[in-house]
Image (spheres, rainbow, N blue to C red):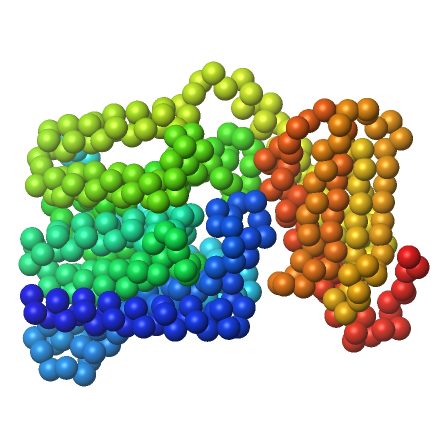
Length: 495
């Protein structure tokens, strides 16, 4: 136990110091999470990259084991596959998150790296080979072991990433998962898994000092994806050493909240015709705030309580027989159904509108794909305007305006393109303006006006327009860079 306490203390102190230093450097260097999207909950720029503190805090006591002569250290060093899997895989995932936080990584790059790491874990012996069935005999997976293991690793990584939407939420959820695995490992006498979990627990708590509401730093994808990776890998080890009656059920229950939120997001987006990897404000924590009118901090505490329920259930499943496991899962299922009904996920009264929303969203996605493709192919500001003009007809706009300027030009300089619908209605105008920004540089604005009587912009249209504004900003930045490199290829426009 002394070794566990020392490891916890070291990881806690390292995470505290690293998170504090990263926060100071992020403020000095402008590594901030800007309030540039309607999806953001925070109202001011907040430093990101706090996940560096979690990563450093987790690895610090483990690295110390290579230098200290101890029985636990000897056991750890002898586990070559465990060391390679956690150190190499963790470093790759943390590096991917760091790149995404700084530069932005597309879905293809993220999933390519995550799947590669998951395959590497499988090759090292991290495998799910049995599925629990509390209502009967367990299922041996055979050839299905590989795809399920890979999907589990990738799924948990992204589940923690998706739930990172409120101050202290992802870290707290991960901490409950860590606590579950620590207690299970302690009861089995698994010293190495206990060591891994106390190291991660200390790192999470050291970060949460700065991240609990009101947060002064965010973990970013560096932290959320790394936490998901470690928990996914440890969950596989936990399931492989559990009784077959509960194999994989315990880790699934330990990570019940992020898994449930991810599944709801997939079903919701599929039914409504939204892109599977698009962001929205319909996650469980968003609905607790909007439908039950809970404050930011109260919402997080309610979700901590839900995590406690999942944690207790996971521990109980470890000792339960098949009948008891079935009863436990049925009880948790009832609690989840009541919660889902309270949050409006099971409201059948709106099923008729779902089909209409899906049809409209599919048309909207087709329009946005076409517009963004044309934007990325534009060779001048004039062609950029031609690329975005289909928005006017597709969204029934009465007016569409695009202002563009180069970063070195005065704020009133640049060019203005405008289109007016000749048959605009007489209703009061609804005007929406989206800044065209690359990093902190303002490159223009997209202005849209409706006169069809609507009082607010549709949520799906709002998210789609943000995608267009981002694409325009990216292309304007490229055109400006091209102009600087080869000015003779750029034809200036008159204002």
